[in-house]
Length: 261
Image 1 (cartoon, rainbow, N blue to C red):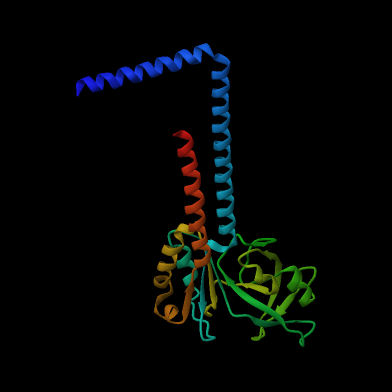
Image 2: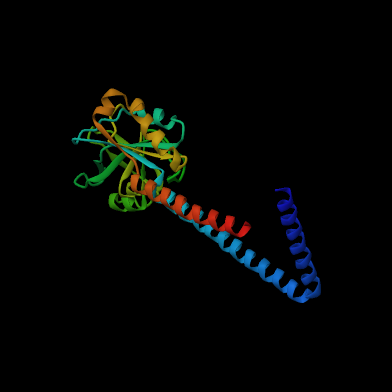
C-alpha cells in the first residue's frame, strides 16, 4: 500500500514539475491563459453582483407595493375597532406605525348648507400623511382635492358637523401609499373621540415581521374588536418575495461557488 502511495505522490510531483516546465518554456501562452481565466472570473462575478443588486431592487419594490402592510377592517357595516387600539397596535414589536380611520361621513360648509363634503376621522400618525403645519386636535385638514370640493382652495375656513359643531380648517395635507385614498376626504384629527373606528392600517418594519405582527393584533383589539373585524396580510406579495429571495439568491450563490471552485 505504501508503495502505491509513494508512486502516486511521485507521479503528482512529476506532473506538477512538468506543468511548471511548460509554463516557463511558454511564458506568453501562460500569461494569456492566466489573463483569460481572470477575465472570465471577473465577468462572472460582476454578473453575479448585478444579479444581487437586481434582487435587492425587486425586493424593495415588493415592499413598497404593500408587502409590509397589514389591515384590520370592521365587518357587517358596523365600526368595531376601539380608538385606543391604535396606540396599542403601534406598540407591538415590529410595527413601524399604525393609523386608525373612521367611517366616512358628511360635513357642511358654513356658506352653503346644501353642499355635503365627505370627511374621515384619523387616529394616530403616519409618515405617509404629510401636513402643512403640524397636527392640532380636534381640527380639520383638507387635501387639494377636498379643498376644491368644499370651496376652500386657500386652505382657510370652517366646516360644520351634523351636531352643529363648527371646526376650523387648520391646514393642507397630502397622503401617499398606502393611505392615498384619504386625499378624497376632509380629514378630522381627533385621537380623543370615543367613536369606534372602521379600519386600521399598519406598516411592519420589514416583511419578515408581518406574520408576528398579524398574530399579535387580536390581543390589542380585545374581545369586542376581534369579534367584529377581519385581519388581512399581503399573502400574495409575501409569497412572491420568498420566491425572489429563494430562486435569485440561490442562483447567485451557485454561480459564485462555481467560479471559486
